[in-house]
Image 1 (cartoon, one colour):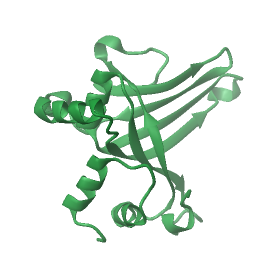
Image 2 (cartoon, one colour):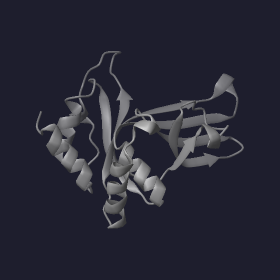
Image 3 (cartoon, helix red, strand yellow):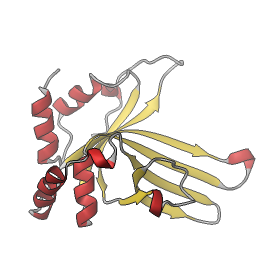
Image 4 (cartoon, one colour):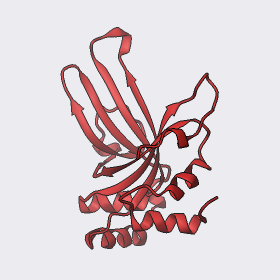
Length: 177
């Protein structure tokens, strides 16, 4: 790997304004082979739990973060940040660390694997489109940003599929610069 895990963690903790090539090499070495687009996005999502669930959002996770909900008579579009760690496993001391960093003007970066799903059930004119960001690193950062109501950056690797049904080609051919 081009970076040690500690170096990569430090890079994410400091936050990104551009995507360093070493970060791309690091993440693509760990992802399944396929076509990806790497991009930095700004996230200022809302925490959703079982008590605050949104019936129009098709997600049964114990909690998640919702962003960019757009609902019309023709359909709905939204983004979800899906955790891989339950809330009780989050360390409030680490959340407070990121809250102080964000309050001081920092924008630490989270890391996500993103999938997009769009559907038009049974040919109806109504559509549903969701972008699901699976949070690989950044649960504490996301919770801190949520508690403060401030954004953080997210390094997203959007899966674009495979050619010929095989896991082939790498991100290196599809990086957004």
